[in-house]
Image 1 (tube, rainbow, N blue to C red):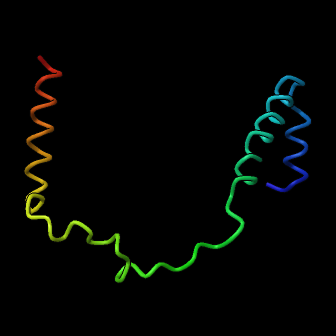
Image 2: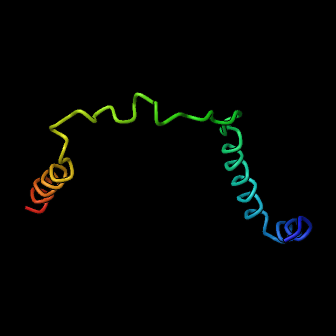
Image 3: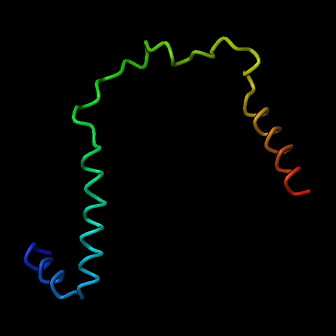
Length: 80
């Protein structure tokens, strides 16, 4: 769709519909205003202290089973 076709489609709309389109465009402009202005820097995940911070925790060795048991317990309460 060309800009001319888009403009013609817009102008062919009733006044109320044109107002709604303009309001929607104004709403969408907020996204452009909130986009970061700079590029994210590269992060060295291999050496980042946050990665693997719970590696030594023995109580989390089988966290999948723990999560499953908590879910089963909580979900069975909500059904009762």
